[in-house]
Image 1 (cartoon, helix red, strand yellow):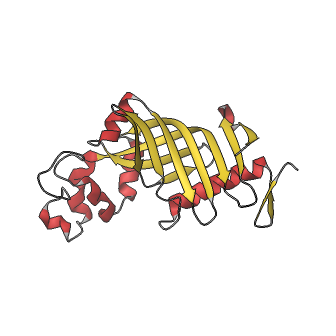
Image 2 (cartoon, rainbow, N blue to C red):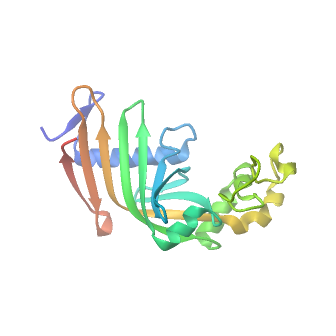
Image 3 (cartoon, rainbow, N blue to C red):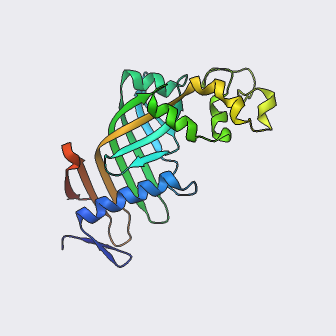
Length: 206
């Protein structure tokens, strides 16, 4: 039997790969989706760093995952030194885990970053309005924002001068692994991507 049946639907490896990318796409589009805030891992000076990021965009054809960041952040500096990244997604309801790995490209003050900035709401832009860089030590608990913006969202016009801090990170995925946790026995599969969006797929022992 070269397929897995989930909720009465049979999936072969090709179907499963497509389903994974549909779920990732939904995660980028729906704020309450369990795939909307995955874990991102990269390599830093102290070893592996893991962070929760917001999945901003998914290209199912070219196999790209995108998130936004501040160029003053530690992750931006780390990715400049080593652009290898891994992603971890988990949906507790479906008991699906998806892991992916790839290479990141960094975009700041270019077409990709500018287009993303224009689509970012004033409330989301607030993240990039801190007066000091993320992760700097502080003597008191602080948001890093000017007090005028802590209780009130800025206008689009007020956010524009902070565009200099905004950046986009795009991951070209070259490997994906799917895991389904089931009381009747787990199931697992992997997908390795090559040129022209071709992939090698195989079932794995969980």
